[in-house]
Amino acid sequence: MAEQGVQRTYAPTSICFGCGPANEKGLQIDSYRIENGLAMKFETSEEHQAFPGMINGGIIGTLLDCHGNWTAAIAIMDEQELEEPPCTVTASYSIKLRRPTPLDKTLEVTSQVVEIDGDKVNVEMTLEADGKVCATGKGLFVAVQEGHPAYHRWS
Image (cartoon, rainbow, N blue to C red; front, side, top):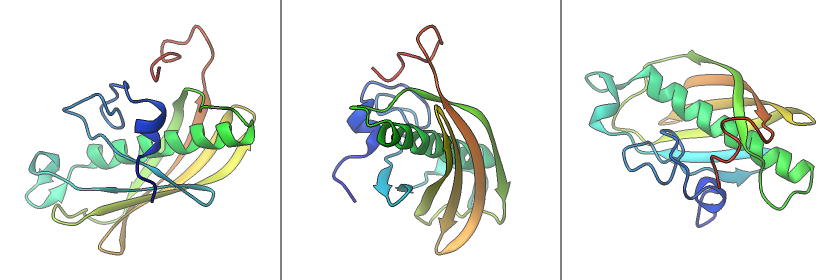
């Protein structure tokens, strides 16, 4: 994996709870390029629990949502040969919690681009712990234009 995730490379001042490097109380995920998508590892903490030893579904959803969003941004950047990724937001996403996600394991999240249609990208995500799939997700992410409240959030 690269030395620095795409979030720190392209949006070092972002305050997003899930992926913002500048949010000291957030999850601060770091996603790295893989073929047709991104990969990341995440170390959980005690405060991420839903019940003893198991991770809260909202934390899982945030990991998949932010990771999928960045997958879309990087895909659009590459597809359109841009110097930096456009600011993307989540249009829709869904997750399936397949088994309890344990606290004491490194979580591995991967994503794959399913389809790019201009400024819209469909992405599939998988979250594993100890080699077992704990959650899967799908999302539609879109690049926003000037005037959208999130437009300048990464700069």
